[in-house]
Length: 455
Image (spheres, helix red, strand yellow):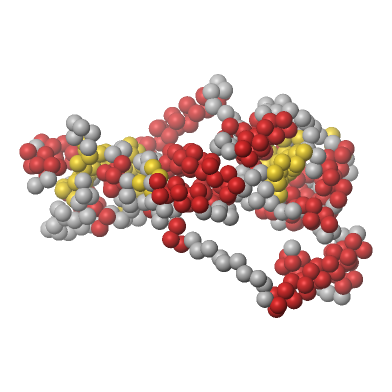
């Protein structure tokens, strides 16, 4: 008989009756995560036969998604969580059972599956408290500041110093760097450190917008400008950013027509809504970002040179994660705390081997990939520490570098020649893709497909 069984045996009538009356179902497990006791109500809720012997069965055999083993491993409670059991959402509470020396000898879980609407006042109270804190300026209304760039490596400290200096100047900033390096975080940090911090920060991902909607989304639309347009018209993102900062992510993806209109905004500080013949003055600071080589796009005729030079006033190059590996331990602990707070999971630490693997991995997806791997590990870890395998180390295979074959070299030369011809045609036709396609003797769709494949 283990310690929990002895405790339950000594207090059989009183303790079990009390547990059953406190909730709509309860279960207790020992330090090996095996069931020691389950209430009749919980058994009935799980549709288990009343004569099925459950004592000694591992809890995950009847509750595959349970977090009770995590509570046993970490010794940390989970006071309120939502869990789906038998296709029904339940409110659950999980508590560790500890000895006087703080060692864990089991855990107990309670479920409530009737009248979950009764929890709504709790959520409402939390929302009111948060709103009050915002109004009293006790929490930031903007999401990120420069201090949210975690690390002390020289490449990161350098970019933070550059960003702080750029924040004091009311001029255009161009953020360059690989995908996942934190360009939007840096953009918000610059905004919050600037004299415009009290104004709005409006971000838009240009690559995520269909080409047909970009103009209205960015510059706004006059009443009745197009079928389905609002009778009152609509403000664009530029107007919404009045007095603050406009962040244009993936700037390399905008069409030549939009490039021309954006150039006017930067040069003249005025905007013309779609379907309007009236120019409206705007006061915005523009921060643009791209993971592509924008200068190369200019050389290839895919991006206007005059707009590039207007955007490239203050270029900031974010370092990839692999060149600041000394930041990875502190960054990982910060992200783990954030993930565990958002998910309500008990805290888990990284094993020494996991930290070594994190620092040796090449991180093609940078900080975004690090966050995703840590989030998966928080869910999948079965020990009291996160291991390298929990992070997906066993799935990673290095691609050997080798010299390209003559056949691959021929394909590369052919692609380069084809791309050069397309760029020449675009320049000859003032970047009008329909005319460029006619010039080349191909369809407009073929031109788009080849541009997409070759760039």
